[in-house]
Image (cartoon, rainbow, N blue to C red; front, side, top):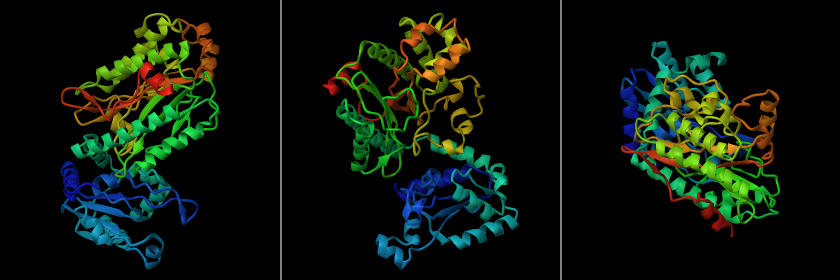
Length: 460
């Protein structure tokens, strides 16, 4: 955890952004896999971590915006829990470590909220993304479950998005630590994979690197020869000569800050000629998007730049034709790039996605309904302190190819007979993480191999 001063200052900045009432933040509880004592690995709510830093289950907190006070609610460990899990800090001592002097039992939380509601005070809370917290909110606030989404505090959401979007120096250091570990995870995959192995054998080594570094993975590992499936978490395929493997994974530090990187490499010692050509186009799109990053520049510019580079490069290979700008405007490029170029990152790999992309990535901007463009998570102007990913890719998705060709779509821009030659190719992407600075953007973490020569050197 950071210094107590950091959490005190965050809560004070929150108070200064809001008009009054109580802010209720629920921590997460344990989530059983198949019985109560056999739980999934615990992960604290990110906004609770941001303001209170306490990484243990069954906690809640109130920030009184009018009094300027904070209270942590929880319970003391029982002797049985101590016998099974070891000595634990008292609730008072844990709260003191994050600059909170007031603590109370969880039973008192319901009483305080009830008296506040009776007094007509506003209670601000965030949209719950877990069923147990949805139920808790209903009980604590006397609300029927269908009414909870409409009672969420948009004022609180906007305040938290504004605060968490700008990363402090200590947060940037944690994200950079996660990025360094993530590079080691990708190096392990690129060096380890061999023809005849099952994907899970490589994924296991990736997970080992993350765990050995003192953290874990930030999201389920994507590592597959079926890279055309954008979020492919299955690891059941056997790697074969001529395959190309797409990897997308990142580390989460012990303070729960994340990184998110992608790599693509051949199972053979070298890329095939076709793989080399597509990889070069995808890498050019990646570098083109990076060049657009800077304060005041809408992230949508990075996405459009990547799309144009893909349309242009595939035109050179005979897969597309016509004017690249017109192709992108029409959405024809989305056959090969049906997703967005990147997203915000921090305590979550998709930072604050639980609060709503309309607040995190759009900030009031209208969202497109066009296929591909509608999946872009971030369009807003960038600010110093933002941390964003850049991850354009090129994918040959048989089902999408068949659908669009049967519908006669984009014949002016797509050379369908040529596209058919790439059926079964898979997918390629590179991804890196960037801090927006006062003058531009800085890549976070140590260099990850990107060029064809760098990748092939690791495969030898």
